[in-house]
Length: 626
Ligand code: COA
Ligand code: AMP
Image (tube, rainbow, N blue to C red; front, side):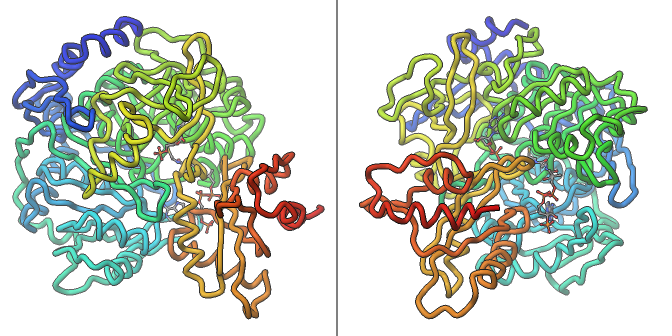
């Protein structure tokens, strides 16, 4: 493999390059067509190919000598459980559960919502959907009922699959009451709810609608793999946009399988039989791509870890797992390493864990800040790589092409565009900016295999959200620059999306929730820098006349409202009551100014401000003297 050769071939001889990558996988009907260009400028990939992604990920390996190799390791410090599934066992469990779904009427193209914690049954449910050609939509277990209801209404699933509970560090979170509440809130009702009962908090089942996973499997016939067109959606994954309504990113089957398989070599340098530990959650894209599909497509071993980087039981958790399972590739969010660093800055807890198998450490989900990069590299002595991607892309847009020979690392940079991604930095008018100058990070169309093909239920929203800002380009929503060597530096979002502990959240959505409170006349939510989580949200509210609550009481009520409506993961812990918000003369809230004030930075008061007097007032409220 050569990065330069692959990169130029991927853009100049697009079809032959990707068809060659496609040949590495086992298709039911191998594609002869690469990209079919659509009216919107995007491509549908491998349109004449036929496949089943679960077959490629499991059956193929069982049929080709990997049946007894470990496919999935479940390690759960929160329940003191460890379990391993060989490729054969996992294939059989998936086929059986797919049989149950089939018995419940699930057919190709039907949607299935999965609301589960990090247990093997979550992966089994995903792969069972793929086996049937049904479209799964996994909802992160930390989301509250309202968020789940939004996704159920949008995806309209025939079946919802859940577990009775999830387990956080010191508490059990009963999922079923949250799901019941979501189903009360949603207009759409699924035909069936399947619940995996966990002993920590068994769920009450509603007769007629809910069934017990373990009991219902008795007597079920395993299902065969459906033969699916490459362009059939494999899943919908909701992500935060700038409005309150999450966007259902639609992922195809063939393009995704090819891109992931390619990335396993090019980005992660992982060989079949090696072990990948991705410390994320199946509710996020990282979990879809590199806990479930990527490692299995590659014939590797994946680890599902139900725990945290710290406190389960301590900051050695990652090192313990890497040593115990001889992990080659570790992938987590920078915030996880910052949490480890905070608890164990000198790495005392790492001592005694044999990390000799560990080859590389990867980080994504948010910018890898140079201090965290340096600390991790120095402590472990392993190469550490930042790579930049999004729910929308499904795999790395920029990374270090280690499969083709490592490029020098520049701290703060996600390194180089991966094959297929023509990354350009554009000015507001769409013209390219010079090297080292910041602009909007855009990708020239068509996007390579693996990237989203639409927004579920609204292709118009897809075009409007991603393709309309710069005609002929996908606009990533991130700002950044390229240096003289073509290295890409991603500096942060240019929209109202914030990144809290590697979780993507919308400030617009939080504002909608705050506005639900009868005491709130107007509000703004901004993301401010946080040492541990990268960013955290802060709410600012103006109360209606006649509100008798103290600012403290109102603040507590609003914090609870966001926890109830969005979930604790939103981490909105501070809401400040303010008399006015800074606005332009045309009425737009000056968020950058608010951020500068809240972070205690020097403020740039724009000339367009309507009421300059409010700046000093806000300064004292947002930044009270210590
Ligand atoms: N189900 C229910 N609640 C959840 C949850 C889940 N799956 N995940 C998080 N929460 C809750 C937590 O319990 C916490 O609630 P609390 O406010 O009542 O304490 C809240 O959401 C915030 O959680 P978290 O962001 O995990 O904060 P933390 O302070 O408990 O832990 C870190 C800090 C850094 C250890 C943690 O954020 C972490 O592991 N980050 C890495 C995230 C990651 O892997 N992201 C992947 C993106 S690729
Ligand atoms: P998500 O869709 O949840 O994966 O979030 C994607 C967003 O996270 C991107 O648009 C970036 O803003 C941010 N992000 C992810 N990885 C990186 C990275 N390596 N460097 C900088 N930002 C990142």
